[in-house]
Amino acid sequence: MPIDVEINLRIPRLTIRSSTAPDKVIDNSVVRFIRHAQVPAIPKPGEPLQLPTRIEGESIECVVTRADWSEEKERFIVSCSYSKKSIAAVDYEALVNDADWTMKPLI
Image (tube, rainbow, N blue to C red):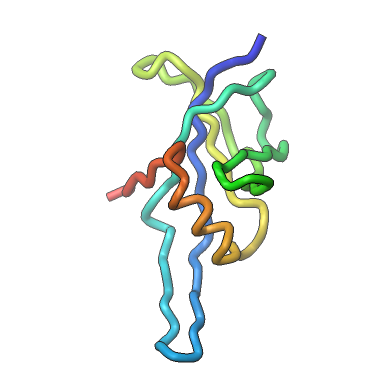
């Protein structure tokens, strides 16, 4: 039976380069991306996760860093990090434009 969890995703900063404008750096160290998902079992630290986006064929690849029970939310919070050292602009756009994901400031 699937288990409802909350995914808490950390992604790296992003530099958007343009030939017509100065480079734009997006610092994601102060935000997390949150969504609810169903998983077959609570993932363990180090396990990979593929999280779908609403863009057909696109998914976010991440690695689980921890999973903790939240009494307040009555579900597991699965913390993840983006699996690659940098995030492509197309993956970033898929994430921020997906209504299933919420950007949550840490400050």
